[in-house]
Each structure stands twice: as structure tokens, then as C-alpha cells.
Length: 267
Ligand code: AMP
Ligand code: MG
Image (tube, rainbow, N blue to C red; front, side):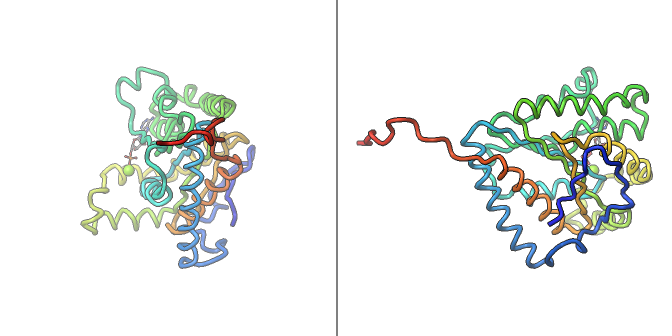
């Protein structure tokens, strides 16, 4: 399967990124669902070793336009894992206390500890996205943030955190469909927010902001993947397989039993 990695230093253009994904899939939806089940099970086993080993940290960053499926990805990909070792942090518009600090303050406190997986539902990237689109801080401030973010992620990586970043790529029509579903399906109505309509008007500005942010911050130590997400089954399968692949490469084993355990008898 293609891994949709953004090569560090390359310039991203969404025109060249298919939001559909089906064309590149080696199999159809039915087979993909079987494969996803196997991968979710593999992820569960790998996370168990990550947690027991208490050595590695994994940070997964999800960014996307509204309705692209960040929440649903979290639900599908991490269904099998032990909740003790996984934390989800959702970053909303900053509170006054958060605004009174630097933009990485609230982020750093949610990064994973040893043995943990942290999933960021939005992240410090909002500080070069929504902030840029809506002029929330002057350009001279947000323009410096790309390199600050690269340095911050480099530090996390040097200290033993594996970072994987996903942009869930949908097109404008797909978003329209999904907002309409929220309006028409009573089970989805709770997800509807007027903000989605307001932000949709800035679609082109957001796409440009994402292209620039991803181009400037896909690094060897914290690479971006642009995941075709119009089809939820493609999205879930691709993301799970990339995470499993990365965790396998860590070569994790359960910690060796302490010396003398074989001599202990339990009466
Ligand atoms: P949701 O993820 O749909 O609950 O929406 C969260 C909202 O918070 C989105 O509109 C984000 O753009 C906004 N948000 C997140 N981080 C920031 C930030 N650093 N500055 C301003 N708005 C933000
Ligand atoms: Mg929303």
C-alpha cells in the first residue's frame, strides 16, 4: 500500500493529491475491512508491548478540515487498545490562560510519557492555520512558527518520542455532503456546528494554509502523511497500517523477567 508520505523539503499541492484513495488501493472495501480488523489487532499487541516496555513514546497528530473524520479515525483505529496507555488531547480555541502563555505551552503538557500513545485531535498546527486564515496574530509572529515547530518536534524526537502526522484530505464536495448529513440525520445532528458553515467559506484559504504548513514542517523526524479521506474505509486502513508499520520498526519486546523469578514459588 502507498504510504502517502510527504517527502521532507517537497512542496505540497493538493491538486496532485487524490482525496478519494480507492484507485490506489490494492483491494476493495470488503477485503479492506478484514485487513483493518487484523491491523487493529496488531496495533493492540504492539501497544501492549509499548506500555509494558515503558521506554518509547508515540505522538500521533491529526489535522483536517471540519468533518474530515478526526474523531471517527480515533474511534476506529484505536478500538482495540488498552485505554490506560492511550490519551487523546483535543485542542479547541485557546482559553485565556492558554493565550497568556506561548502557543506551545498547552501542547507540551499533553505530549506522551514513556510507554504512552498520545493522539492530538488538532494541535499546535492550528497556530499556523486558523491563526493565519483569520489574522489572529500578526504575520511576523506566525511566520516564525514553522521553524519553531520543527525545532520543538525535533527536541521531542531526540528525547525518544516517535511522531507521526496525518492530514485527512477530503474535497469540498465531500464536506458539503457530510455537513448535509449532520443537518438531515437526527443521529448526526449533535455534530452540527454553525462554525462549520462559517469556516467552509474560507475553504481556499485553509487549503493554502495547509499546503504551506505541511510543506514547511514535513521533516525526517516528524513526517506528514496526506491521507485520502473521502472514503472512510481507505482512511482508516491507511492510517492504521502506517502506525503499525512505524511501531513494528521500533522492535519492541516485553521487558525481560527480573533475575530469580524462576526460583520464586507462590504458596
Ligand atoms: P472542533 O475540533 O470542531 O471541536 O473545533 C475546535 C475549534 O477550535 C476549531 O475551529 C479550531 O480552529 C479552533 N482552534 C483550535 N486551536 C486553536 C488555536 N490555537 N487558535 C484559535 N482557534 C483554535
Ligand atoms: Mg468541528
